[in-house]
Length: 389
Image (tube, rainbow, N blue to C red; front, top):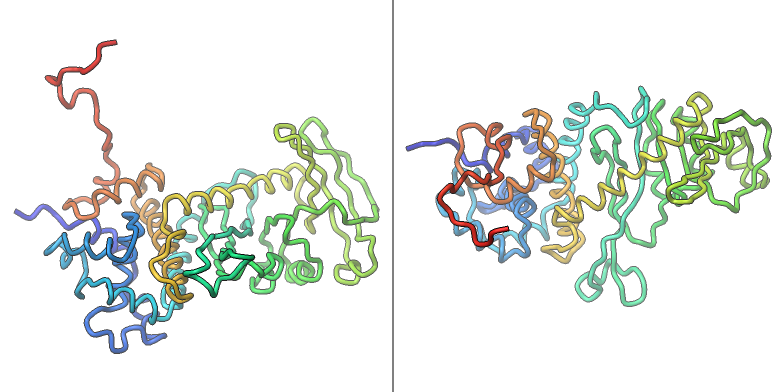
């Protein structure tokens, strides 16, 4: 008797089919595909992300064991380890990059009304990078240091909903500040940056474009003070000053005045010097907004723990970028499902449920994800206890 579609098929219904086909045609992804389409590749890799598969053989074994359920889940091609490996090596990774942008745009619309930890009407972003370590013998093209290989994942995170809206994969030899040239700043938005982005020549065009930045300043940068505003030192603030760069070469790169805010974090016993081009926000709001930058550190930690981006199924740059972008698409897809179905569970709980129930049949996907899967004490009333306390 029919009892509903499998959970995996209902999850993939949230993927917009037409934009995906547009991305495939743009890069001729299905040219001479011989039965294994780009959609089949995306489904296989998304299955690997959701169930934390270890290798291509692991993916092949698990999917083939499901038999007839694969067709009802949306798979149309024959699942083969060699076919999937060839697809990851040869098909252009930009297909999944462009499709991820479609999902990110949808997710940002859904989370646009979410409140921030501070009172701020404008959009706020956090920009940072993380290192993904690799094996030098398997990834010689990602040479980082002596006898080491690694990649750097640059991410611009929308702090409303923690949605990654800009991601770049580069060599570890690429400085963080160099990424500022690749980002088009939004006028009126706030960008929270760490010390690695202290580059006056690159930040000045952002200020001219109407964007605001909050960057943690290095201690060896000299300033000339013009004006000092009073602050409430009981909140951790130490100073709020209007300054200008002291060094003439630095002043040529950024000739305008800036705002320097000093804040003491009592819990960590740390003194922070923040520099911003925003003179409208209260000093306490600027300090609180910089605290929100910690969300991107938690985002990096979360995706490394719950997504497959540290163990790769292919060794070429194309295969690595394909896997990273499908992992990001999977993360954003779960965030879209959570918001569109108004689920109270966290992303972690949803992923844990999906990891063991992707091919269960249910007529109501939302109710299935919302129900409490925890075992209660009354499930087996006649079961004897092993220990008495």
